[in-house]
Length: 207
Image (cartoon, rainbow, N blue to C red; front, side, top):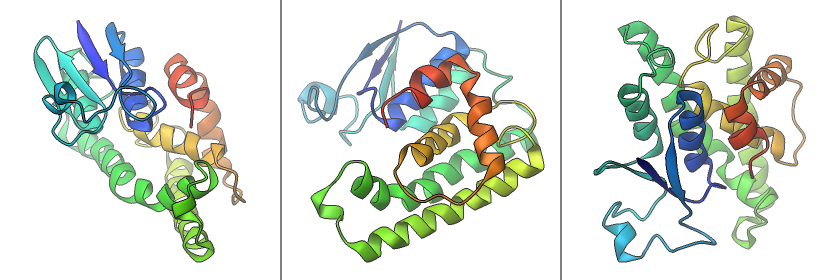
């Protein structure tokens, strides 16, 4: 049986848990990381020398990096509807998965640590303002995309891209800040709420 290692209040672990819900995959889950067993323990480092969650072990196949895990799960467990084989359809999905990881995540890091985690190391007002402005800019990019699709991030059907992007949208609405009016984004948030996996590991999960 698939085993998932990582605390379920981690946005990256919740990607994997949500994907399993979408695909109907049974799994065993162990909490590792902040507040739980240390990822610096030798047994964990033996699975991921980076000491980061999540990690999966699928009958001896060990894999880390959350987006790589998502792609593996749809390939291994019949998720073709979420991640089509057609190169152009797949590339569009990959574009938004990679955008979430490389651009969007970087923009909200400082603001999230300051406003939600209340980190003493993130108390600089100028850096906080810059982070919020940058974050808002990327959410406007997403707003434009959702206005074009009228539904999900990569098109009119739910895809693998909606898992990482949807969790970032949850983080946006869960952070106490002044947000611009983005109606397509708000509609997308409500659309995702209709999915049991998002209700379990997104909107009602811990930020």
